[in-house]
Amino acid sequence: RDRHNNSMAEAFAAATGQVYHVYHSYDTRGRGKRRKQLTGLAAEAAWLVPVKEANDLGGKVPYLPGMAVFCTENLATELGISNGSPGTLVSIVYEEIDGRRYAISAEVDFKAYKSSDRDAPYPHRVLLKPITTTIHFSLPNSAKSYSATRSQLPLIPAYSFTSHNAQGRSLDVCCIDLASCPTIQSAYVMLSRVRSLKGLCILRPFRLDRIQNHISQELREEL
Image 1 (cartoon, rainbow, N blue to C red):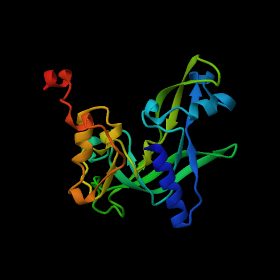
Image 2 (image 1 turned 135 degrees about the vertical axis):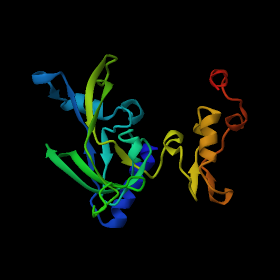
Image 3 (image 1 turned 90 degrees about the horizontal axis):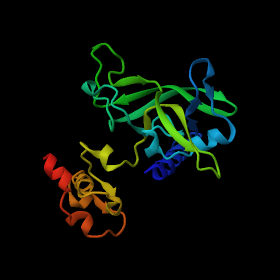
């Protein structure tokens, strides 16, 4: 997902005549006055932590005005801003430290959100700021794990998404990877997103047990 999103973001930058930029997460260790930003090898190791292991807060995320994005956090579900909500990035405010960009805030238009202010010039627009999560990383050639606090915008490019993020969507065209499904529930979510078979593309061959298995005993008992 993330590799494809990054490639598509680069293509979007080229197509719209923009310079491709990535925005680094602000990773720190310690508390209060002892809190310090990670630097050097520690910072690089932290930025390489897989997004899935960082609650979808990426270490290096491309952001470009006009780009399709989706929210990765349940910020205000009652207002239509939740994990998986699609939107369009309008603008981003950032600071630059040692040649790296760090996001301060971003304006995003979410279709599912509508301002209660009838006179609002942009009724679907929301200002988002970074949120925090705890990550774990290891230094090169070391098995010791360190923890850090990550601060990053709860946004990622929306050119590709997991089955979890796809829930609730209806798509005219989609390309799915059934071979990567961990459960039959994931396969169901993927296949049920597309409106017709004409719009369905399967990325690569897959084993039949991806779609022929029964649901787990644990889930059966829960249901």
